[in-house]
Image (cartoon, rainbow, N blue to C red; front, top):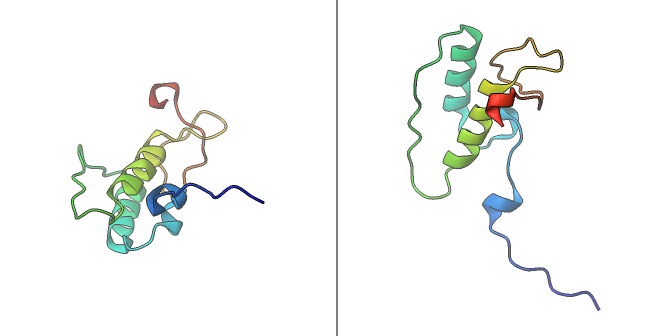
Length: 90
């Protein structure tokens, strides 16, 4: 008989890896996409809301997007992070 699986909070079980899989933050994703495309990023972002709305997930994706350098090392901020980050972003 299999051992019962320990309870995992939904936020830890489901962690989006791209902005396209982020649920419920359409306006924020559109705003960040436009800012990255136009190279007009703010100096800071304040993510607020009640528990469970995706603040941490959004912050993690934003960090990936801003620190992405691409496989050739010559990239920049992108709305579709590739997984390669600058050494300073680790």
